[in-house]
Image (tube, rainbow, N blue to C red):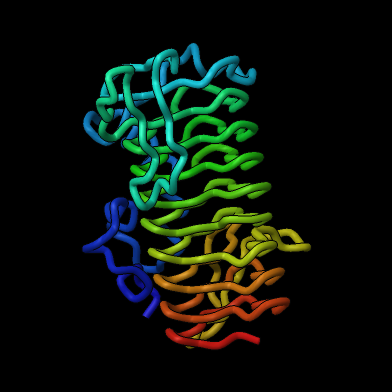
Length: 271
């Protein structure tokens, strides 16, 4: 089974409609740009940041987003706790909590028009985010993270220090906390990448990425295709996935291991 439901619980993820009509799970990558543009145009799924913030220069001062308002931090108190646990707390001068407030720290860089963020989001100093990008509720973009556009991060996700993300999807709870690279890839719910995980997306030789499936070698139709990691997959430190790697839910890619292109069933141990 190569359809999305074999890898993700689509009844419990924010961006389930990305997979509508996909017979093979990786086909969602071909529709990612359209999905992002549709989400940017819709109301009620976050705040589209004003174009003037996307000038590509470090923010001179921190900003707080509360509801539809963008506030300076003057007179506000911020507790920088874990976003996924709801511990990012912003209070006004009277000690009243600004429920769901998001924080963009001074020194963060936003580039282009088309960055939408949800409630309870933290974007740390030194992060660079290119439009178009969607950042869901209670997600954390840490210092020196690099989001290169057409990135989708669901609820309670982490793009961590020195992590580069290009044309990729984090479903709810997915975390790439340290020194990771994700190109043209999809992380399922509650996936956790160990430090230094790399999801390679381009073959050495010309042509589309081929996937070794139980039915034989299949053309993905994609020139660039990294990895699909099903719900709950974990990777060890310094692990690598080759272009066209599709790993079933609940699997482990052990530290320092390389996963060859192919489809791996649920609860596989890759060494």
